[in-house]
Length: 254
Length: 168
Length: 106
Image (cartoon, rainbow over all chains, first blue to last red; front, side):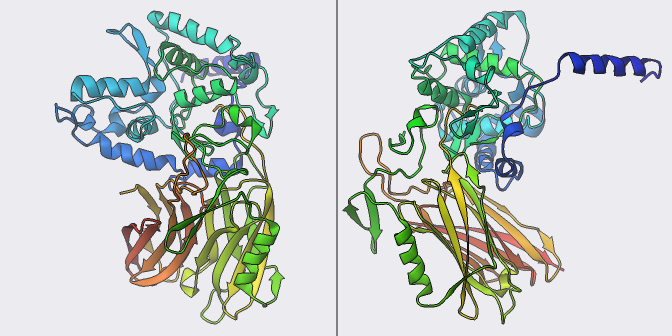
């Protein structure tokens, strides 16, 4: 860098930090040492059992086309790097965003001529976890394109809208009261950095949609169906809200 | 899909419930006896007495000395379904002086046994780590059987809070 | 076959104490739960784990329903000679899964 520019950049950085300190905290940031240790150690993180399974499925030909993911996409370590950090992403033909699970199933039906995998099935979680693993440490960078704006607006509205018999919005807990205790638990900010997650409560891997459904059931609200446009819009808004935060899938959460 | 049964926590509706496999407090207890015979018995929890009985069966009349056994688990856990636990015992682990086995017990799960591991000089260290389920706040006890036939014990108390609305 | 993760060094010096970590995919169904129709779900757990080193058993565990799903076990063993470590998990149905890892001892 030009030495004349250096002080200017340093000054700009200082101002930016002073003006907008990043108060965002991922589930990992607020987790206790035991959960962090479990997530960080590849042999201790049970999510890696699904990653391993996903790696096998990646290379296995399937469907009427008898093609594997690898036949088109090659080495996932190269080709899938950063991909999960960009989902949900806009599909021009359908004119709406698809989340990663939907994108995987679209590949299956269109290119592999195979049946789509069921939501929360072991195989769909496995392939998703394997793809998401390739984005570990990379910042969330969902698209900011114009055609996605209505979906972002819908997601934001859903996040801020009161729901269910408890009449609470996502925002009331995760924007206004994060860091406080709800019963024995710390309320997180709700950043989807690590999905699919191995949730200790579930003793299994699960998707962001499963987690959202849990939260909605907790509010005594009618949860969105898997793959519902509202669910995808909410996922998209959450990813936008976490823009720039590093991915840590498969994460371990309480 | 398996639903968590009620009874464990009134907060389970706060995003906790679905798919949990935690033991619950109100339940029918199935005891698998011998050759897979299942007996249906009325609700029962392991109690302090049940744990004491299980320990007595292991130790017999031998004195149970505290010390040398270090049992580590988080003092407060957010979720009782997966609690990391480590047991280590001070021992040279030689042919002449080693830990033969470590037995882990609990007070308030449906049954008092958690795990038993068998070690020897080839193990090098008297150490084991695993993850356990805890139905409630309680005391966990580890007992080491030493090669001279004596027993040592160690324990830890753990508070299990209930999963609330932990969106991550 | 269930998925398994095993971590141990590929090489070690004679006399070194090596840490071994294992993780296997298994529901560890306790037998204390009912499904959503009120029918008891039968117990199905891994009840036994063993590790042998060139044929000698160096570690063995008896597990109960209090062990979490996808059981994790970490333990140690002394590096004595080059050869193979065999890990086996046996469940209530009597099925055994076996994994083998090679080690070079210098």
